[in-house]
Image 1 (cartoon, rainbow, N blue to C red):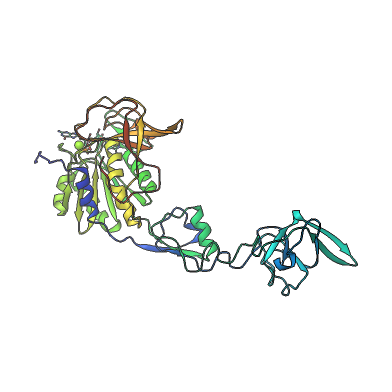
Image 2: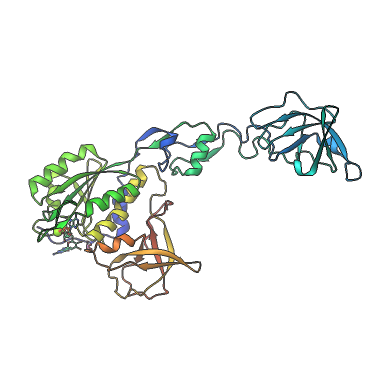
Length: 423
Ligand SMILES: Nc1nc2c(c(=O)[nH]1)N[C@H]1C(S)=C(S)[C@@H](COP(=O)(O)OP(=O)(O)OC[C@H]3O[C@@H](n4cnc5c(N)ncnc54)[C@H](O)[C@@H]3O)O[C@H]1N2
Ligand code: MOO
Ligand SMILES: [Mg+2]
């Protein structure tokens, strides 16, 4: 085995991956089931909002010219001809001297051009007729929500690629989208390699550990907006791994394996890529952890060989698989957002390579603080539970001190950025 591997800068590794990006597949989904999905069509205003002039208050619709000159000393009395509730329309156009009782959200009767709130009106009955009295003048258009004042028909309100959040759902409903085109969730197959691996329900036996990577990666896949399928754990046996991996390719957009990418006697992934005739895009990245992350391409399909070490596996997924999944679901800004934050604790280790320290972003007295969440070692699993960010410490830097400004990549924040920016 050739033990020499040249570490590739992270941005170059990402570029090699993203050079293989494809148009994601789309499907139509009912409004009830589209939450959290990524829009594959622009959402247009199919009607003006509001679709008619409407009242913002419970009150009386009036013709403003009839109220001209009215004051406390010179009140005006109007004949109340009918009541219009939301969902109903006035029976006829209004005439001089008339008022229509109108409720919030109801259509302004033809002829009316203002609304007086109940609170400034007096009402009385006389000879079986209803009247209202008002002691002030109203302006034309006063208290009217005009047709189309919120949006004109035809305006693009949400772009394809946006995540369907509760507000987008409200728009889908407003504009009659009972079904909407969304990107299909990319299908990602996951194998965990390692003869040492036990299933989650198996008791520990000497020399073995439970397979945590598969479940972790499946959860990362879900968080990234894709659909993960656990294809099982594989013993470190060449034929077993080769047949499992090669047999899975046709069913998935991406195939992820964990473990077996380093230079050990039972690290079989490099030979498997070779036998598959897959082109290895890189097998060493200038980063910690996850330096052994390997990505290979076969007929346009990507195979991710993530490290077996849990923290390295986790970081490798977020840096290299997450943006590909996001671009497959049409996100024009597929990279995790980066922020500036204040380091909450000393981090004394020097950083020969760019380091992605698992950290937690929190807010202290209005400031964004990020602190490491546990032992900063590639083989560590226990610190990952508290992580919601990576603290990015650029290669070639010395240790950092509490209070220093650092960059952090947010892992639980939906908005992305267009470029991977290397800090
Ligand atoms: N001579 C060298 N040795 C190593 C190098 C190197 O450059 N030269 N790189 C080290 C680095 S960095 C890493 S990271 C690891 C990567 O190892 P592999 O990706 O080959 O993974 P394995 O050997 O299969 O396992 C490593 C470690 O992770 C545990 N593991 C594996 N799968 C799982 C799983 N599904 N759940 C939980 N834990 C898992 C496994 O038991 C090992 O302890 O290589 C270094 N070595
Ligand atoms: O790939 Mo390793 O994670 O740098 O420890
Ligand atoms: Mg190994």
